[in-house]
Amino acid sequence: MSLKKSLRNQLATTLLSSAVGLAASFSVMAAEQTYVTIGTGGQTGVYYVVGQSICRLVNRGTEEHGVKCTAPSTGGSVANINAIRQGQQDMGLAQSDWQNYALEGTTHESFIAQGPFTDLRAMFAVHNEPFTVVARTDSGVETFDDLVGKRVNLQNPGSGTRGTMEVLMDLKGWTRDSFKLAGELKASEQAQALCDNKIDVMIYSVGHPSGAIKEATTSCAAKVIPVEGEVIDKLIAENAYYAPAIIKGGMYEGTDKDVKTFGNAATMVTSANVSADTVYLVVKSVFDNFDRFKKLHPAFENLDPKEMIANGLSAPLHEGAIRYYKEQGWM
Ligand code: GLU
Image 1 (spheres, rainbow, N blue to C red):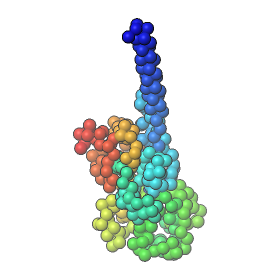
Image 2 (cartoon, rainbow, N blue to C red; image 1 turned 45 degrees about the vertical axis):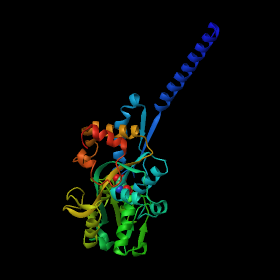
Image 3 (cartoon, rainbow, N blue to C red; image 1 turned 135 degrees about the vertical axis):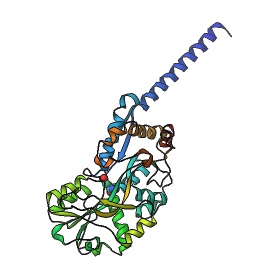
């Protein structure tokens, strides 16, 4: 090979490798622009606080890891799971019952229509969410069965609360016609509707203390109603994702004694299609800063990491979450 030719070859190789180098640095830059979206719930709920808190922790390191996190308000659990399935959200908050129903493709018509969501993945559980019924004191509602014939807000389709209410309605043999009015207001709209006397009852599967329940019970005379009896006992006994729950007396004006109900866990879910590195980063941001996270809402006060990665999770853990939990020696 002549010297000239070999030089030319060398130059070509150099050019080529610098082009590759350039492409590589472009792809690093592209990776630096990663966005993570966490679906939450109404702005007066606790999911919104969870999502915003997680994003705040993730975004403290954006300069270093390049991931930017946003947590918009959404319609709630069922809407979040469907948005994750369609690739519109990377992660989201969802009730443990709806995590299970989505995985199995049951209970909600949208889940039945799509079949089992086999790519659904769990990250961790957060706080407990008692199924909470609040009635105007002048409505005469004292028990859950008293809802029949009243103006009841069932919430928007897409909320986990609405879904769980429909599960209860089926068990009780109730339909929308069982109520004088079956409202579809969003979670954030119902406290005002209650106090404007547009509805007698609002329902909310939510962590406590909840801004929405505080708003209702401080703006007008309203109280928390127990949800108990044989049907509820059976529901809890047959399904691991439901558990007995108590709403502590004194937490809300007008409700001095403990109120018995049942509840689910709030959980963070994602899809197997979301990269392990992204899920790892989000999980790490929460648990590396856990004391800070716990201070962001009173409902997080008693959270324990080992319980959070075991309880209320029907879907398999995401591999990125497992990586972090193994590093910590939690599994
Ligand atoms: N559990 C509720 C739902 O899925 C949302 C509660 C909240 O926003 O804190 O509809």
